[in-house]
Image 1 (cartoon, rainbow, N blue to C red):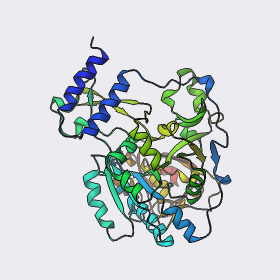
Image 2: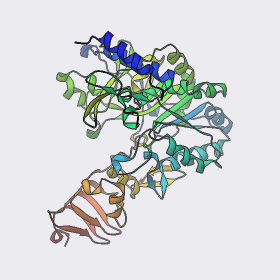
Image 3: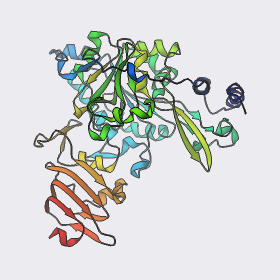
Image 4: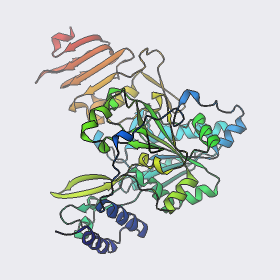
Length: 470
């Protein structure tokens, strides 16, 4: 049986010969693997978990109002950088290339909306908020071409890559590329926890600090609710908080999301993977753990530099087993939210649900393309005509999974302002001007083509065949 020390020694030799990656990537990878092999894991003692107070997780409505004068707002914004995590591909929605170039609404992509939002801020206040896109090696080349279309905008756009690490062959713990797999399948981007070292290694961090930037607002590019919030930025600057995680109240759809806890005098993220089996149901309880991580993060740039250079950001390692052409491999990853416990004066802010509007599937696309939302200056605004504060639950069958199939099955997106829940499966097609209300299930019987006619108004109904539409 090979010992951990022998495994690490063999791995170091093999990694030294990988010419495709930089020295800093090699060092970061070896450091991650050695932590994993040492069995370093953060075990949470359940009895020590405490619910955070309002000083630790600050209610959004207690934040001080934004300063009135436009010069005060400009001073705030000139300390800010917006960073979008842009490493994901649109493959789960049947698209090629970066997910951020999927059209969300009115012919505009995620990236278009982000650029329009920051352009409007810079125009309104005369500020210079730059946009950083953290790509992966999967999205870098495409993104470089795409951002050229924004070259005449009043916004500086910078791109950089998160690290490229070799996948580990599970059997012998050697890097897959050293066995001849030097194509993309031999490598992986190590999770968005890599944002901090990659900012430093790319040179972007020092460049931003030299321009007087103090805070970076990090968010997923597919979260349409993650817009610059001046009240949050003002609060962090006034209180000298080094790190802030936006959290929002859990619904039943979010029971697996990470939550913030107070633990041994510090605030930290608790993920479901860290929870002992006997406490998983308690973790999922909305009564006890009421909030979850939106992955909207505000972080002080000087603190990032201090902690990365000290090698102090040792976030929990997430082992992610995969298979490449029948070979079992392992990816070791980290999450940016787990870094919260290493920063001084770290807090959460309990924000309105409107700041969490991710588009992970075509069911989410249906929500944001419907009359439940409107588009104003690049911002997706919820329709005030909807009385229910929660969005309807939408479940679409595999026929709707790919964006092209989804769009082809709707002549126009139905009105869903008064919808509670919708389940659609089978060979179902929607006409134009359809209105859906209450609880609706449209599941076509096998071999049946169901066409919802133009202008149909359907309320609280279960539909399985054409006769149910009469």
